[in-house]
Image (cartoon, rainbow, N blue to C red; front, side):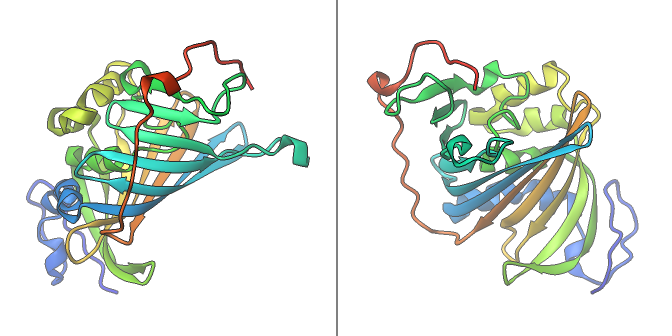
Length: 255
């Protein structure tokens, strides 16, 4: 594999690979390629490390990039004791721009009810709070990519991809984000979330579509690594948002 060292700011291109010619523009355009693709299946993984303890939350589902809606079934860590009684059912998350709907998320919530959260009310704009980064929000962060390096060609899930590495400037991401995610991202910036920038690794296929992106967020004294994988582009994604009567309005107890 040929390694490239093309960087932002007009740096020299040390590779004959055409993928190295404009790494910044290529990465920033990734969200638009998703809209053109329409939809895909999605997998998420969120790793949190703090005080020597590592916790992983995984999710699986699909996303409609044109409607800006998606569904993920998120698996939380089981009870530390590991007993069958302590196993938690997956949390169903419906993602709709500035709105997050969750089922099985809070103790004391009836099984047939949803919890609704406006993502702008969360200090991180729901980049990590929900246990999974909204797949389109993960892509839109790349609009704020600053210095970007083309690393190499490789393969993910049997697909040839180009690997890029860089750092997201959240303030720039806010200015260029779609209206569905702009307010939530602005909240994250105003609250000082990951204010030193967000390092990322992005993998794009030959059509410029994002196949995987990994962001590394700094939250207080912890590091959160959020990975979003997209595959089976064009797969149908059906999301029906809850009616008002299906939303829980009471107090959510701590687990």
